[in-house]
Image (cartoon, rainbow, N blue to C red; front, top):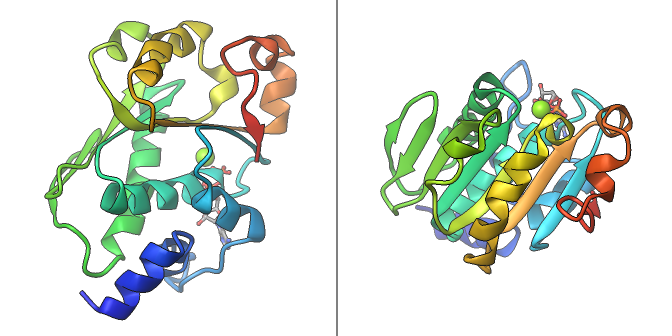
Length: 197
Ligand SMILES: Nc1ncnc2c1ncn2[C@@H]1O[C@H](COP(=O)(O)OP(=O)(O)O)[C@@H](O)[C@H]1O
Ligand SMILES: [Mg+2]
């Protein structure tokens, strides 16, 4: 790998966005300031409230692509449906494939992506907490369309986070989703305290 690229990427995680995210014409795209901030953030809990099509999944997908290289481990993606989690995994994979000099992808399906450094992303449906309980010590848990994921899922991830002090929990939703869910989620001890992104 080019030492210059590796140095730039390691020094500034947001660089993966410029390297890996492409627009409809296949051209590299420039991240907005909030997108850079999210990618650089080491916050253990973060709530990202941005409108639909605002770039949430792309941003966090790029963040995961960076993390899987520089903070190897398990990256769990949970959304209301498996279909949505698969879309998130695909965004991450699309970014990853545009990065040069990174660990090889050893296998990639619609629900799992494995790298030769041991990193793994798993896409899960958020409709049954039994699906979530088999995993241990994740490096990150991404909850996409978070306002529509039931509280039982948040309860299932709590012990995992307790056992994994470096785990980052990142919840993505639209402000409308939060309004639709009422104040119950954000007011609950499970999502309460997440930072607005
Ligand atoms: N900084 C950016 N510049 C140009 N296009 C972007 C940028 N961020 C995201 N996009 C594009 O915007 C579209 C919506 O992004 P997405 O991450 O799916 O949004 P959300 O998850 O918020 O609905 C995608 O086509 C994505 O490539
Ligand atoms: Mg999205």
